[in-house]
Length: 338
Image (cartoon, rainbow, N blue to C red; front, side):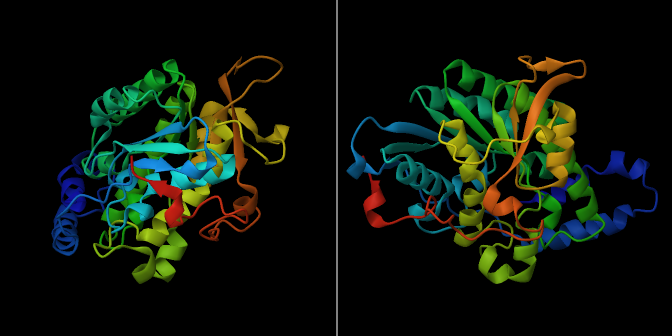
């Protein structure tokens, strides 16, 4: 939670190329942000258990890995956590039970993923959702190391025949208590990490959804409703909206995709796709083939896609909490602990 302080303590390299920034100003901003953003006092609620038991049949196993954004820090009910939202959405859409195991850890950086994936593999997961990167920015972790840990995690999961969807690093510069110019540095680092994550995940066989400042306009318009009490993490509605944006990609990874066939214009080299995704939050990047080949002269091919109910709107709009078919949402009968 002492994100701004850690950012300010690591800005020396960035300041070398931006002499106009004042170290003293950054330190004052960091101190102010530390005062405003409280430390975590309690872990988020757990939502582990069986969802959609009423559907019968063999349950899909879903694991949630990552940091506080994956764990759902800031909400008060298990059903409001990202894991519960994804489990409910998958169960309702596929009409089959889903068993959820939340392994994400509040405060985790990418270097903590190996321990989480060790635990995840014991459950023989069918699909993993990973949200990671924010703490790597706030701790100013070495980008290459953070990306390597994420790539290794995806490769290990894919080797176990587990589908993987990664929500890339959000825009830390959108956090209200972090003011310019510290905000500008945080935004730059967030985007650089998100682009590198995209390349690494797709190379390893996973899919990504760029989060960036996807919820930024709505958070700015209604911060009381969209932020939790710490003004750092999303509220229950904020998490629901983020889950709704990622849900089509999660379903597509499971082979349930009713979106129109992707246009050839959406095919890019992987680095180009990663760069475009960072600049257009809500964009899915997945591996693809061109003329039967996964790689071209410039490297791996990748497919860019936007969700039809999101991409049809302007970049500043955010979809409602649930798509029309109710894929994201919760009712008491959805969840059975066990």
